[in-house]
Image 1 (cartoon, one colour):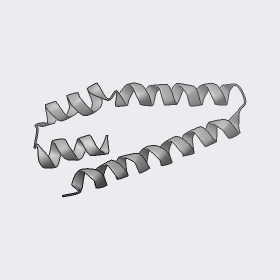
Image 2: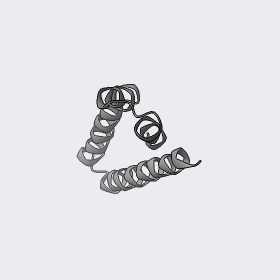
Image 3: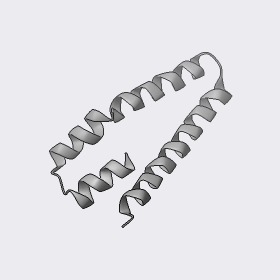
Image 4: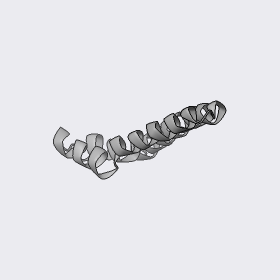
Length: 77
């Protein structure tokens, strides 16, 4: 997502509607977050608090790291 965002905003300068369509619509960011939320809630409700915490922390760290790496790659000359 980070790579696509940089390409669309800094290299191609597409309008906000196209960026939203491609980044959110095509990559499914909202659907992915909803799935993450439901999976975490199911773990909590089933009493698996440690797994729920690992899921939350691990998902955020990995996703932010991947977005950061994509931004770096997208900005390479």
